[in-house]
Length: 119
Image 1 (cartoon, rainbow, N blue to C red):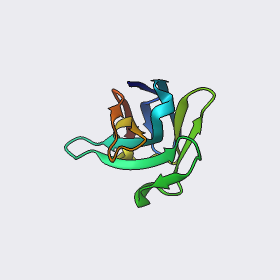
Image 2 (spheres, rainbow, N blue to C red):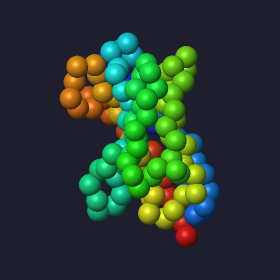
Image 3 (tube, rainbow, N blue to C red):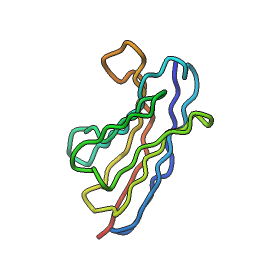
Image 4 (spheres, rainbow, N blue to C red):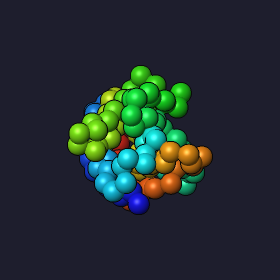
């Protein structure tokens, strides 16, 4: 089992920055990649970014490239999502998720952290 706990969300004004954290515990040796997703009110959950656990390769959805940065600190078992120049449309619950080696899906999910951006 892998446990994920997000933190760092909050209410901010447009143009501000936030850094979300995802603390990872449990079977970390089984993780191939970590991802961040978000779900805005009335919308489906969408992929935002991902990073491989060992090599650090990163992937982003086109709409966040240049403003979002995913990173990880393996010593701290923590994955981060730096969000700059926040926009009201970034308002959502942000979730981190873990993909186990050999799996075609994200197998573990955190409880989410709310990001609200006021205009």
